[in-house]
Length: 542
Image (cartoon, rainbow, N blue to C red; front, side, top):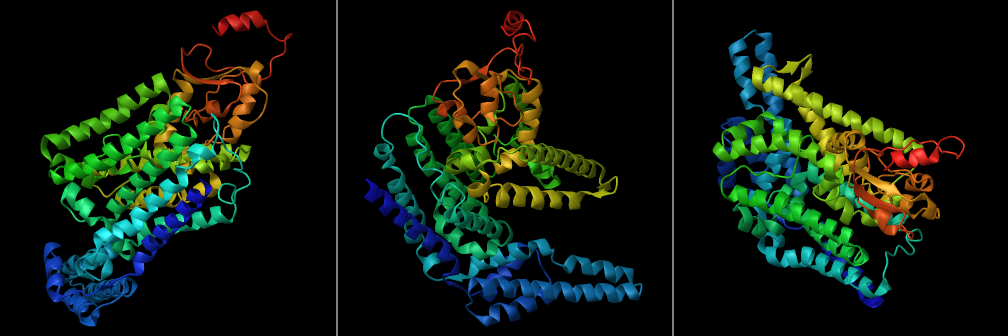
């Protein structure tokens, strides 16, 4: 079994290496007809940019992706420099009419990579684009096969009934060792390239093009690659969860739930909606996690889509304002963060091996409270400014430009915090970095859970042996043992109700409950027998 385990790791690494190396494969030879077709589809009728792209890209013949991308972006930059000079010239001459006309020919710098990606998609030649099925087998296929061979032997290797974490602090992969740092570097690089340099990974889109065409009728984008990879990673790592926690029904059901909501609601349904000419929408994604729900482009898209668009708009508002807080009242934030959310789903599957790395220090808890609530305020301010600009036609509110704050939030929170840091730092800071420190929806849910909810984790202090398993494996950095030793209910805004603390407790001290609010929050001080009437305290807790 150990041999299969090790062979599986080798096969997985081969698949990962081919997947990563495919970035450098093939070449890109843009033809004049392809360029004209693209420019026409985008409504670009600019003689200067056509000339520059022909000179810098078309005439050069086949190029590697990095040279191709650089050439396209260089041509676009020359275009902007040319028209900036004309704008300055007409401004000096006070020729306002001609000055105003030049702005339409400038290309937004945010679109440079998107244009490069689209042109690369049209002009690719070579092994990857000509052998998509084989490349899928050599990348995703080998990766999945190797992972299954690595994971499946644990059915025997884990031995008798019970949750095993043997050697977890002796492994360089799970105790912030050199393997963990390598994984961090790879994940961070992956997210940076995916978010900010998508034209470099256009070959990845060819590998999954057949799947995208089957589901939606469209060629794959970098976001389809990410969505498909997301589902594959969760599915494979869910098998690991099923094996490791196979004797715990709560964990099996929870894993199945997040897997269903991610694959069906977040991936398949939006793709199918696209194929039916409907706006793609993840029906489980609530605001403010779905931060661009109230952006002007989304509102216009929904309002222009007829009945289905109006339904999505109403559903998104009802989900945020009514369904979310009501569900939190009855079941705590665990119903969403641990059973529904895609971010939580990845954290609970791919991130499970790293949960013990979540910091339990007091300074981490203080940082958590400041950061997560600051992001919540940031998202609310952004939404207010955005809606004000949308309904009034103004460009700003109280001096805050609408476009600027949307872009700032999208880059800083949506890309860097949620993606690059939130997932990339799993191996070092634990699997709930984003959920704990940044997610505005988690902050919203947490406020409801802390002050108006029936959820709590009850403790039996008399049974606690202070082994510390509960605190060690709390992904949210809660010192669960401190509560258990006092027999105090655990009512924390950050608790996502994953139930691992209860699962790893050898004495059955911890229990997740949805009960009456009476007696839910216990005093924090240690009570002595001569301080209070213990029988009166006991009766009040009933």
